[in-house]
Structures are given as C-alpha cells and as structure tokens.
Image 1 (cartoon, rainbow, N blue to C red):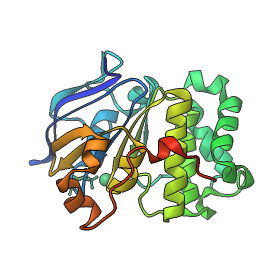
Image 2: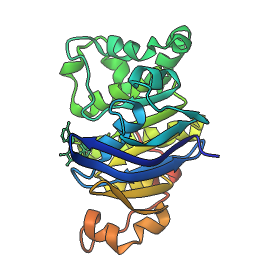
Image 3: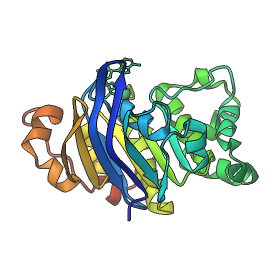
Image 4: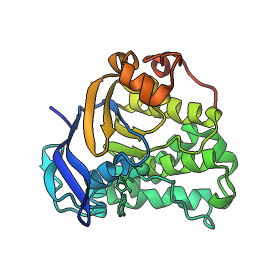
Length: 254
Ligand SMILES: Nc1ncnc2c1ncn2[C@@H]1O[C@H](COP(=O)(O)OP(=O)(O)O)[C@@H](O)[C@H]1O
Ligand SMILES: [Mg+2]
C-alpha cells in the first residue's frame, strides 16, 4: 500500500499543459526520484502534489486520504512537507529562526527542541552558524537549512525540489548522504525531483523519468542506471554508470 499516490495528474498554466496524465506512487519508507530535464514539469508535479497549484484532472492520495482541493498549508498539516526549489529562506532572519519556522505545526511545536537537536546532528555546520543571518550562508548551507526546516515540521513524508541545484559536488554529497541517512534511520518516505540523475540514482531505490509532462520510464534505480536513455539524456556518453547502492553503503563525512 502506497503512502503517496498521484494518479493521472494533468496540470495547466492557462491553456498550456505542463503535466499530461502523470501517475506515481511511493511506498512507506521508500526513497524515490523523478528525473527530468529543465522544463520537464518536475516542479509542477511537486506543486500539484503539495497543493501549491491545482491540477485540472487527477487525484493525489496521501495515507489513504484524498488531498484534492487542499491548499499547501492543509497538505503540510497532514505531514506531507515540501522543500521548495531555490530554498526560499528569509535571508535577514537567523538560521535558528528559519529552522524554527518549520515547527509551526501543533504536533511539531512541542518537540521543537528535540527536532532542532536532530537537525544539528545531521548538519553540524549549522550549529556553528546558528545565529548568523541565513542570507550569509553558502548555497549548500542554505540547502541544509531548507531541509532542516522541513525536518522541524515532523513530516511523515518529504518532497524535495532539486536539492542539488547550484551546489558544489562536495555539498551535493553531504546533502544526499544526509537524506539517505534520514530515510534509513527514521523510515521517512522521500520523493525527490532532480536534473542531477547520477546522484539521485545513487541515493534512491526507484525512479521515474519525466519528459515534457509525461512519465516515459519507471523502474528500480539499478535498472535505470543501465538504461541507454538515461545515459544519453542525463549522464553523457561514456559516463561511468552510477552506483545504485552507493549512499546505502558508505557514510560521508560532513
Ligand atoms: N507559472 C507558470 N506559468 C506558465 N508556465 C509555466 C509556469 N511554471 C512553469 N511553466 C512551464 O511549465 C513547464 C514545466 O515547468 P516546471 O514544472 O517548472 O519544470 P521543471 O521543474 O522540470 O524545470 C515548462 O514548460 C514551464 O515553462
Ligand atoms: Mg523545477
């Protein structure tokens, strides 16, 4: 039984379709990726699931409950928390204040201190910068804050929009190793959309490929890493195939 299922989503911007009958499913405890080039519809898919935009057709079900018609706050209140593209910090507020904004749900407010400890355990760099304005942090550190803020909400599932975007390879490693660790430690289901296919295929177990608003492939990451389509569209000719279990095996220093 899936924790999240989206069925036949069709989302339009005016007359222009951005999702054309997209269906995906994530099982409890699973970490799943949706790969797609720029403009494929990845953000539209997450926004359609999270209630930021309303699909014209199709349904989203989270934990057996339909989310249809709910706005982003109501969806987050169900425990389905979106970590948006571009991080969206409040740059003049401190790291601590930005993190605490994540704990607005009633359930999360009571356990704010424990969740903050958890975030700082996963991202020790943030402990050193906790009283700095978020705008003074590097892009990679801001991505840590964005993920930390989502963890502060005590999600039952996380939606992540291109967490690797614009980051150096070093930070991409850290971010994905922490996501894999959170998934492993707490069994939190994660759906991540990415252009960076190699890292996403290494960190997740199942993937979908989105092309011009349609799902054109769906399989385990082990199978996807061997696929010619993935190699040609995402990895480049002659690229080393991603190691589909890499983030499950090693621990990255951070
Ligand atoms: N607010 C918007 N208004 C009109 N068109 C949009 C809007 N947002 C996205 N689009 C279009 O929808 C398509 C999918 O965009 P998006 O979901 O942002 O893709 P991705 O996140 O994969 O880059 C693109 O063709 C994009 O130009
Ligand atoms: Mg996007």
